Structures are given as C-alpha cells and as structure tokens.
Image (cartoon, rainbow, N blue to C red; front, side, top):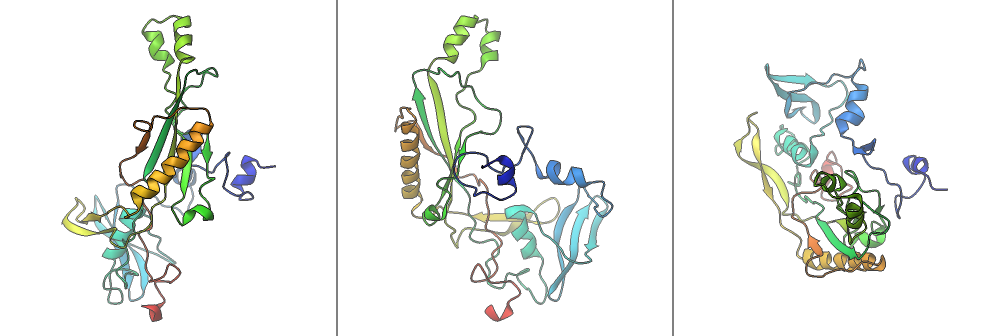
Length: 298
C-alpha cells in the first residue's frame, strides 16, 4: 500500500498522482530556515551568523580552507577543520566559485574548462484552463499549494524532450465567499455563485535543455558588499516553442478528458521566463561525471 510515510522513506517511486514530497508544514510552504536551522540552532556544534555575506572561498593550493565574509565589523575569515560547503543558490554559488581563485585555479574553484555558471536552466510555467457550466461539488480555491500533483510525465521516457511536472493551480476556482458576504449578498445568492460556472487550471513546470551560452558570470559594478554584480546571459532553446506547444496540447487533452471546455485563444498560456527553479550552474568537468579534481581530464 502506497502511503505518505512509504513515499517519505523512499520506498515508492515519485510518480503518478498522489502524495509528493514537498516543503510544507501545516499546509504552508516551509523555508529552509524553518525546516532546518531553527530546530537545530541550540546545537553546540552549530553557529549561525546573520547579517554576514560570503565573499569568496579561501583557497590554499588545491584545497579550500575557509570562507571570507563581510559583517558589520568588517571582513573576516572563518577557517574550516574538514570541509567548506558553498550553498548560495544557483546564482550565488557559481559567483563564489569564480571569485575563489588561486594559483591552482586561476579562473576560480573547478573552473578549468570555463563551465562554472554555464548551462543555466529554469522551468518555464505552462498553463491550460478549462470551464464547466456548474460547480456542483462546491469546489473553492486552495490555500497556497495545490493538493493535486502528477509526475506521470516526469519520467525517463519524457526526459529527452523535456519532462513536465503537472499540478492543479491552487487559485482556481476563485470563489471569495467572504467578499460576497461583506457585499451583503444573501445565502441563496452566494450559493448560486458558488455552484455557478467552475474554472480550473492545470499548470506545469517544463524542463529546459541546457545551453552553453546560458550563463551567470561576473559583471560590471559592485554590490554594497563590494562583490561584482551578476551578469546574466540567457536565451531560450531553439525548439522551445515547439516543445511548449506539444506539452500544452497534452495538458489540454487531460483537462478536456476531465469534462472541461477549453478556449484555445485565451485558456492556453506560456508564462514569463522569470527563472523558476534555476539550476545546473556549477558544472566543472567536460562531462557531467568528471570531477573538478581529475586534473588529467582538463
């Protein structure tokens, strides 16, 4: 039997419709600070410094030995006993790697091939809406995060052409009962509104293909911490529109099978390219499996 516990323990494939592992607690999105840092902040082997900005990794020959950071008291170096972990996101991490040079790594840690920051990908959002004449089940919008999600099309079969992660848009149907009560509508009037036409929307994150020219690099000017500003070079893959339309066709077929009508002119949308889930920016070797320390493979 597939249960939430069996999925959390990694005993079930993360595919199909049902429970998925997401950063939620009490029905709300749970940030890393809430999920990881605050529960552990009392540990004796953990020190949390706020108001500090990492400037670069400190490198001696072939080894990172610490991190240089800026605080209100000025710059300081925190030395590591065992290892240094850079976790500044898909934009900040390649920037720190490029700033962390040495005689051994002139272009930054692991950047022998000038690949750090390249092949940036994001997940454009696709959407298809549909309408039914009646909302007999009295569906209303959900709070923050959708309950219906599917990874049916997030499999190896679909990965070559760009897999998609389907979800029900939480904002539809949009029935604001409180608004109608404040407006003085009667119970029967509100009931007519609630059971009137119902619109739902399927949304999807579409996987892009990495492009060599898509990169985050060190730009001109500096931030208030004295760090170079980030230069972003990003263009969509040549086949983006074709793949997006194919996925929209698939989503439309799904929502029509659920009994909804779709207006092809107004109900199908490709969202703005605003960097959803940007990733893949810390590649170091010519091949994905090559280590930055494999010097013979430079």
